[in-house]
Length: 279
Image 1: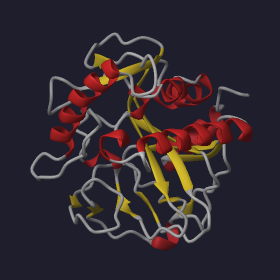
Image 2 (image 1 turned 30 degrees about the horizontal axis):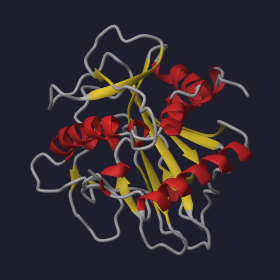
Image 3 (image 1 turned 90 degrees about the horizontal axis):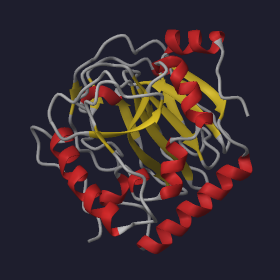
Image 4 (image 1 turned 180 degrees about the vertical axis):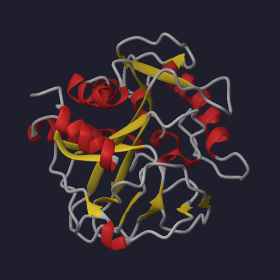
C-alpha cells in the first residue's frame, strides 16, 4: 500500500487544512484492530474511559505499532516534514444511536504546543458516515487560532466542551466519509466537529496527533512524545517506550504520571479531569 500522498494531495491539505479519504490499511486489518479494541474493552469492563482514553498507545503494544506504521507516518511526513513525533492519541467512539456530539472547535486551543505544525490522522475502524456521526470539517479555516468558550455541556465529547468563538457556516462544512481502514488528515487549527450517531453500529475512530519535533510544550517541562519517523534533534519531549504487554505494570506507572502532566496542561484555569487509570 502506498506510503506517499503526492504533490497534488499535499497541496489540497495545505489549502483546505484537510485531506480525505486516504487508504491506510486494508479493511480486514481495520477489522482485526477493531476486534483487539473490543477485547481490550471487555478486559477493562467497558469502553476505554477515564485515563485509558489518554495515549493508549503507551499501554497497548498493538496501538504503539499502529502510531508508528509507515503507511500512516509516511503521508503525515509529507505535510509535517521528515521528522515526526506522535504527541498523543485517543479513540473517538460513538455507540449505536449515541447522542454524543463534538462541537465546532480547533484542536490547538488547549494543547499548549508552541506552534501549529501538528497533524491529526483519524483512522476509521468502522464506517464513518453521515448517519454514524462522521467528522465534519470547514475547509480553509486553519489560518489562525481563534478564541474558544468552555461549555462543559452534557453530551459533548470534548474535554472542556469548548466551542469556537466564530460564526461557522454550516453549509460550508464537508462530511468526512471513511470506510474501515481509511483515514483523514487534518490541521491542528482546522475548525471541525461531528453530530450524533443515529446508526445501528458503533462509530470508531482512532485519532493520532503527530507533531514536528521543533515544537515544545509551553506549560510543562515534563511533556513527552514518541519518535515515529526520522530523528528528534531538539529533544523537547521526553521519549516514550513501547509497552511490553497490554497494561504492563511499568507502562501503567509511567502512564499515570503523564496523565497527571497532561491534565494540568489541558485543564489549566479550570477544575476538569481526564480521569483515572487502574492501579
